[in-house]
Image (cartoon, rainbow, N blue to C red; front, top):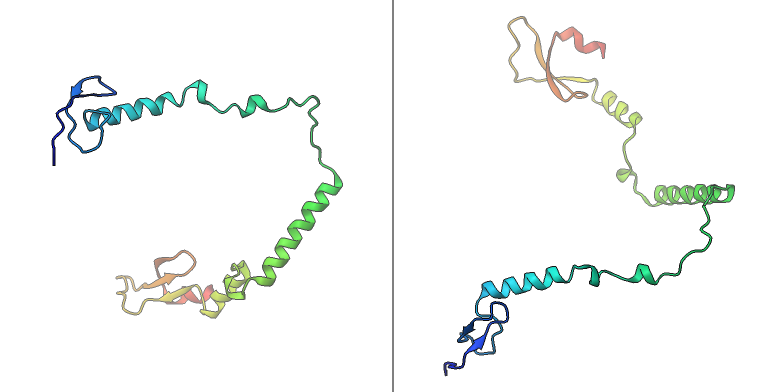
Length: 149
């Protein structure tokens, strides 16, 4: 492998250098290469390179204000109804969201809001530990309090 003996000039710092790679190098180091890239990148975000499509658009001579009318409201209602109907038809029952009625039925099926924690130690005054399903926390109640759900 032959070593280059010709000097090159860095395109960023304009220093002379002997290239260390096989192909022609533009920059003397990675630092100069990165700085040149950054300089090019910031130069491209100047005012001259901003999109000119806005300037090329034809000016609107009479802009009209949109207003709400009965046909637009009717079209929106029909579209909403159609989407809701189709989503109800094609959504499986187990994937539908739970309603408040569903949650009340679950509580009834579980036979109450509070469930005793069998391996929990009661407090010194005799209150036993229960899990409150609604609040999702541990509570200590008298045994007769759980029947008044």
